[in-house]
Image (cartoon, rainbow, N blue to C red):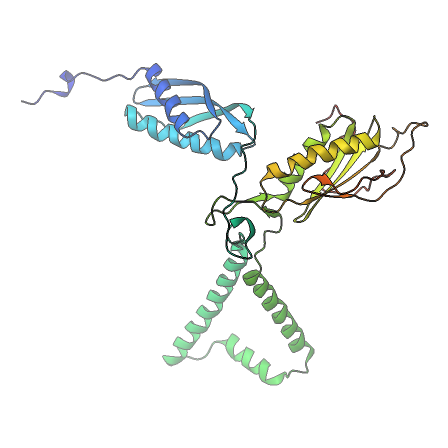
Length: 340
């Protein structure tokens, strides 16, 4: 016996149930350290609109995390409720800063690969590969079409006969031929460099727990972390940080306090911060401090000295501090401690 559609009844999913399902689905896509703060849902017919507020750990790419949470909330809510969820709204309401996890010790790798971090990450270079493929495909396609036309009794294309006539009338001593050869050699050298060199010089290799795991840290991000730690030292009102593969340079401007004491504290803080970056090779630390212009007091004199290298965050030798600070660097700090 078949029951008419009008007599089968209806199934209604309350907005509260939809909200709880959306919150649970969003929690499944949260990264470690994240949490769902609140959620809301509105049901109209067979369509539901949901919104979820989350707390994310810092530092983290908020846009990528929100996209994963939104997609998970949409698909799971639609699958479990049977409602159509055209779009979910994800709000990042707060960020939580947790203590950095301990860096796992890397397993011993093959000789010449310290830290067991596997081969170096190579740049994909999609643009050069796409340009070369497009030019090669166009040239080969034109030549193939002309050859097929000649084979079927047609006349050769005008561009091909013009190229042959020009090449027959010009020899290696012509300026145009030499310039074309130099250009071809430069393009060939560039393509060889793209094929052989790994690239990604702006990224620092990180230690990994297994050879098949590869990770890298952007130099700008590493410099920003060190700069924030340096600005947290009492007396430092300006900091410029540049991070390279083997060396991290810090130039700090002192607004108050004894420069030698401020420098010792900067060395101590940054020496403890470098291993927290989790790099495969901890860069040597070089710190220079000096009075900020307009902040020098008449009774305070700062003797000059050169950089003092440190190994793993510990100074190799004590030395006085310079009167001036070089103005070059990758990071510009605020003029006073009240600026962000």
